[in-house]
Image 1: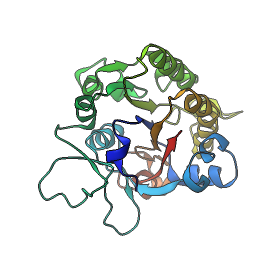
Image 2: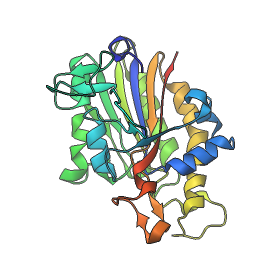
Image 3: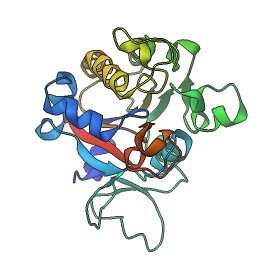
Image 4: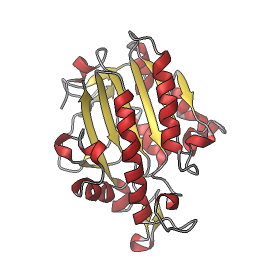
Length: 265
């Protein structure tokens, strides 16, 4: 575990949530060399198997932005990287960075960070009160249709916006950036050659991850150094397993997610 008390204040912090990415698909593509940009940075070139704190985007992100990142899928205890001050917390350890607000973005803002959200899926679209709740945690937030699930170029469009944000950020101001990547979420049929409209599948989900990996190399090249980076899924999704389609259900393919953390220097 990193000592986050040494990281916070000296590093930018980047949280990339690959929305809906399944652990089994991510692990298979990593093992077969199909996601080289991610594997170059993941410890040992592999994803860690974890359990999500929520079975759909809003629940999972609300928990993660309160310091409850996906939990290692093995017996604990599992100290957390970030934690709101809470008497009796059993997952706050000496290396945990503790904040005195209700959520991580406001805690980092108190520590001098500029907090930014570049949203992807509908819970970040700011078109409704619910779609505004998560973005409202940040000092600056961005969403437009070109960042959403229906645009095949959503991730490169989002990275363009990240580049713009970085260009105007004072070099002495630390950054906390949440990038919610919509590309993995249904619909994703358009990433698989020969797939018909609406024909989302495990294979098109994998094709979407290969597409995302090609563009994430550009993102990591843009990010300022030093940066502490977390890349993970918020939850998985079902493509017919045991008769299930989608998420917000208690199925293994939904609750088990890929996770990685590393420092860019």
